[in-house]
Image (tube, helix red, strand yellow):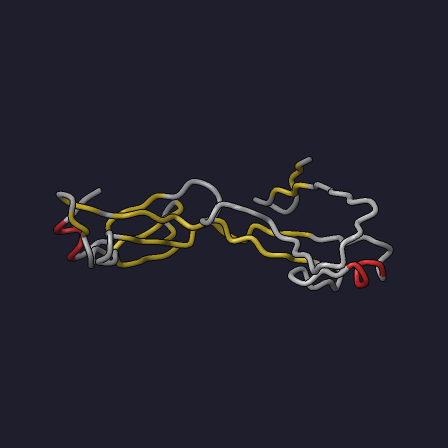
Amino acid sequence: HSSAGAPGALVAKAAAQFEALETEDILTMEVVAPSCWSVTARKSGGHDLDNLRKSDVAKTQGFVDVEYELQSVYVEGSAMHKKLPTHGLQLELLQGDVVLGETIVMKNYGYFALEGRFGEVALRVKPGVSNDTFGL
């Protein structure tokens, strides 16, 4: 189930129920998300989500109520020219006319990564020396 929350936010609600869980093992509760998503637990009802024990969960009538938040997404990739990394190339990520971030392409595999926002974004070569040499 999904619904709109705050402007630009999407709220999804889900539930899982495990009846008669007999294990005494320590459990972890997490969101398995794509590596380019930054997801964190916003509310956990006081539980340590990496070390859930049956005895701790029993103190809250057997419930663990967690609210996760998708904080940001990452734009990542590699920049190559004639099969060689374009290390040192300066890139910018924009949303409209607003520069969200900038980075320099790394030498190993031409890797770059930028933290983005939700919505439409554009990647460009930063104006200046890099722009004089390369174009997207």
